[in-house]
Image 1 (spheres, rainbow, N blue to C red):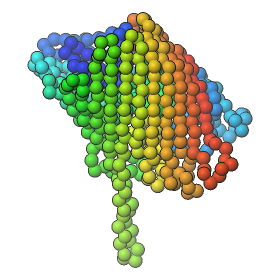
Image 2: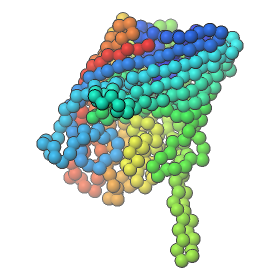
Image 3: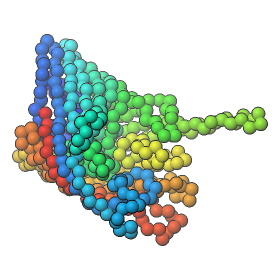
Image 4: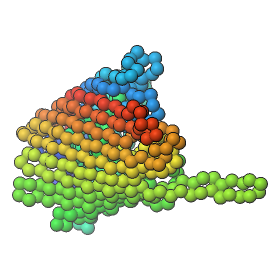
Length: 443
């Protein structure tokens, strides 16, 4: 499940609306049916959710047998496959739950005074849909969010586990195309929640334990400061400080034109140590390696007369392909090389959407660049890392009350590092096409 939108009651402020849904989910004509179960004596209980199923056809290059980091779409091929060894291809069909995924959320709100209230949300996601006939097999359930927020005229204090700040800007743009779709499936052979277009420009902010302050909006501007649980893993086991995310956004309407500008940063200091040694009664102390994970992102979204244009760019060190400090494969992390040196990243993304009545057509794309480290360019490396990844797409959805029908096409291209000492080496790349359609029920 991606960021489950917060159902709003009559006293919910705009400051707490989650930016990942503002560009699309709050647009006119959206499929939505707020369900308030209880509302009395200042207490209210409400629910929100989404159920979806999508058919997706995947066609293109099969997985490489090379040892690579980042961007891999594993089709579970093996040496016994009967396929062309010089250019293996794959064709796969799956039923998927989509980028948002099957989800349900519950919220309890409390009105304390005319100007102060508390909001909360517990968001639950079912990780994928599958056709296993064994009813006793474990189904993955993820308690993705659990937070509360004290909302006052002087700002909002939000605490608990919640969608991160850094990356929300690109998520807003990505959601223009994939709020009701699939996009990149993340894992091609499984019916898990998908990745949309994150990894080829847009980032997915992820979920963090955090304490966050959101200022009141003044002259269109609003500031957010978040201290979050630091991200560590693999060989990096320590962080002396919490991770710090910030956002400054501008949101204002000028006649028929609505403008939204978002600037975000992230900073996380991480540390790793080596053990000390004792040789012939001589003590050699261990070493401490300190790195700073950082990133900066800028996003702009403008809407007028049914047309919405959104785009932006970002750069950073140690960020990763899809999420900050990405280490999905601890043995071959993309955010840093095998010596612990952080890799540098930059990306850009954009979407153009036109809405006419209940119809929405979106076209767009993005690209990610990874700068090789000195180890990556040497003969001492142990794998080939992602260097470039881009995609382009067309999506269409039609809203009928609380039902949304979706059609989509995406082309995805990935390049991996080529050894500079071997100029005749064949470039390692992968091209895939994802296409399909689905249906969503939103409440």
